Image (cartoon, rainbow, N blue to C red):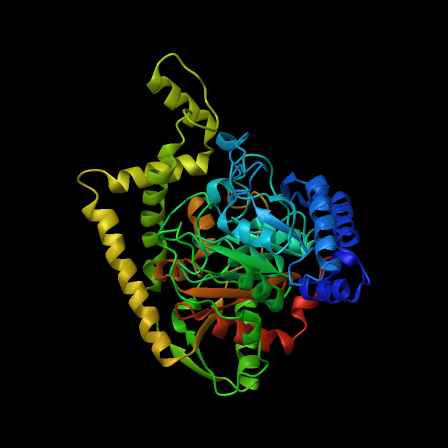
Length: 483
């Protein structure tokens, strides 16, 4: 096995035993990026000098007796998370030259543990997209088939893991942007409960929905990353002061007697038949492992798409108003202030971002607020209550992560509705504020299929336990694309 193929926990064992240094591990991953990223295009910004410097420091800390799971581990970070001294573009021209003067809280946590920053990964502009085709810079390719998308908006992070261009990564999930690309790239992606992980330093898209989450080669790596980033932060007003457990302690290979709910509304017409088959086989495997499987109902699921596409653009309209070309980012420096605003935003934002700003501004406008935004918030409450009722009777709810496998690049760019439907199975989790994980559960047409496991608020331990038990009983997570 090559060093870049290691998991975080696998590399940890070698580092502890002194069989490899962090510098050697990091250099191996940097060499891997040089070998394959011209095809994958997972990274917007690479920081090899900084990575080797941090790796050397990690080796010194280990030699001095320090030991923690992320010490010296080369990681990738979605380019929407602020990194001090390293550009953070959000995949947008409007922030092309923006270098944050501070670290996001999650970056401070990773830094304190001695993690190594390889670079910032490509994404849909301001996290608005399901394919990473909306990046202002280039399209990221799925390592399993370079003619297909990696999913989005955290497509760069998922592709980097699938292509062994990092050992682990962070992404953000507003409507499925960690779980959906994880499914399409055959890796593991966890969306924590809203408020579990600090959003301080996460560039805002839709503030009531955004959440930072880990992506890894297996469930154990996601648990290790969660241990590092899940904690209360007084700088984030939405951070919940609930003690975070040791997530690796939840990885018990036993789900006998656990109750698994299967929502009938998640197996719909238009879903790829082979995807449904792989997911139902995974549910059968959970039953074989001793879980009690029962049908549950989430009756307002059909309203999740329109609800999401009223609430998230409305919040985006408010959040993106700050990009005016005055304090930071792109500026066209017109003579008149309003001309400066217009020219900066016209040239700085891409088509999808402009579409959502217009949708959101319209939904919030006088005469339409009650009819659209307020009504969407009421439906959001109904969706949350659906999950509350279902999860009162079962420990987890399981369903497909995506209705299809990865689609062809360019296939849906001219049809926004078809693109939005890519997230039909993930949106509800964000609207309800609960946690969910996507794990590999097989292949359809030679491409990965993801199984989504959803749990109660702050029940990441439970979804990780179910995910781990399934993973240990199968081999899907061990498969890697041939590059």
